[in-house]
Amino acid sequence: MRFYQVDKVTELCPGKYVEGVKCVSLDNDIFDEHFPGCPIFPGTLIIEGLAQLSGMFLEWCRKDMGCAPRRAALSLVQKLKFRDMVTPGDRLVYRSEVKCLYPDEYGAVKVTALRDGRVCAEGELLFTFLDILDDGMQEVSDALMRFATREARIIR
Image (tube, rainbow, N blue to C red; front, top):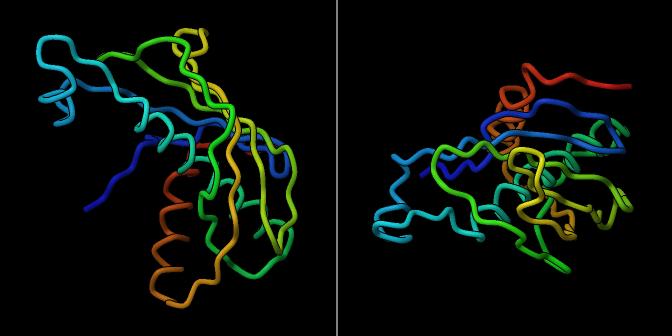
């Protein structure tokens, strides 16, 4: 099962920041239970979207630095606060900014989810880098990164 929580990457500045978009649709199965008659996009899925965007970004940064491929794995969520609810029809803009990046060890990012320019969620995420033991998994990851960033504005 695919579980993508970012629709596309819109802007990427290696080593500094990345922005992406998530369009929240009523046809998402999650709204059958969360909550009937009052659909609210779960905060955990906002965190997941921010983590997917940030992890992909940190992997991109490592590759841009000439490092061997490694998987960015979320290891810590801290200082994360939800400021506003997200409902079907909303368009979230996710932003992830590098706080620190030690390419052989870990990376930390400051993340924000915005709806109509208003902060819905913000906090910090920490990632560790894991060895990729399967070449097929790396090929899928590379293809996904190319697809997600195909229309992104890359700032150097």
